[in-house]
Image (cartoon, rainbow, N blue to C red; front, side, top):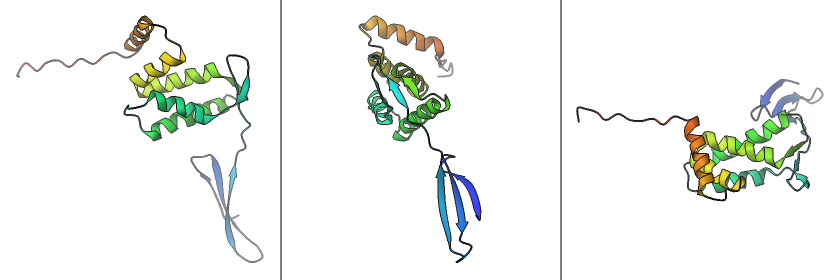
Length: 150
């Protein structure tokens, strides 16, 4: 082996190798094998984790919002990495939903409210208002004072 270094944001190890007989060089990549994640649905069914489902929900919430595709993909990657880091092979759909809500709250308040309204099954305007009031309490509004010189 000639060289070894992390690659692909730490998800792989790139190794540069040299054949002792012919001197030819080649590159190999080693990946950590992650066990398959299972999602426990609210009706007790189990299904394989599908990152595309998570991404689809985020995309719907972020429709016509100033959230880039890269940001959305990053949210999904973080959620998936957090689940793997927990060391569990099974996670409830409720936990995934709360993780998505948490990420959206950080990125875009409108997308957060959209997702929360569907995910938490808001039934009326009062539930929207209650959620918006929680959001206001978490994040103080910035008020711009008028300039007296104007």
